[in-house]
Length: 391
Image (cartoon, rainbow, N blue to C red; front, side, top):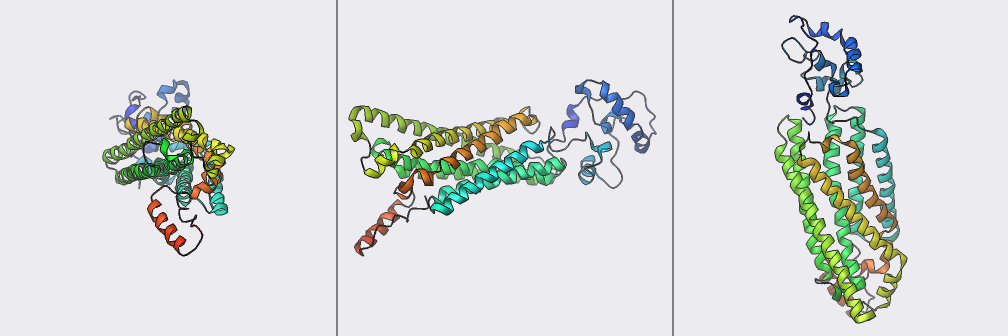
């Protein structure tokens, strides 16, 4: 199981010659004296009592009767500080209740924001679904870490946070990808090297691929951990999914910057005629919300990218790697990065900032929409502006 190899990393300190026949019951009477000795030793030698009071043959004393391991005993008796205070759990550190409770609260507020905006506007179903699903997974992940704070030997809480927090940002990235084509339409498709709908058709399948890899890898690693088997295969698949997500985000940032540079070059050369001159597009580009949305999408993309790079580096060194032991880095590069990405998109929500262009053409359903519009025009009906509201 994750974290159990901590025993192999700690120096083996003994109390000198001991009676080979001394039983664990007798040795447990010396725990209080052991703790007094531990207090005067350097932090590097702060060993669990059950390791410090080893038997004369060098083995760890057996767990109490009826338990196959110390981890199982402490999972069932987490309040037994006398025996379990330093028994290794699933983490290399004491899980912070304050940090994880804060993230649950912040993601809860973000979730209410995304649900509220969709309920009020009825626009951007695909974006809303992606962000709501991602935020729900974040809440479940940090709830799992709170479960681990209550009982660090609880496998369920550990596996919940590993699976949920690993795949959640893939949903958030998918929501960001959906917005680029709208921006291209607002400035004018002629400024892009590819058609607006191509962005969606390119990046969404890539995002789904990374999501599937991470989900499958996380599930395999969880099953292997539960069965006390090697998690290497599942870990490698999960890392492959994260690495592919990093690659996809990097390509997305490159094509976004390339589009922005093309807009600037054509605007310098052609002036205002380089941009879409329709009233809707002009008003949208000049609005504060649209300008804020572009900045919010940039911040969200960078945050998700940085977080994904960190998780690749963290997992690539194994479950006993140096980054896996740093709760401060996890909080900063996982929790803070993702909550910032969510909150900026709450403030500058595409369904509000894009206004009526949130239901404009450009996506998976473009051809279908044109056919429906033409059919309704023949019948003398008004345009079907809400047909594409799912994108």
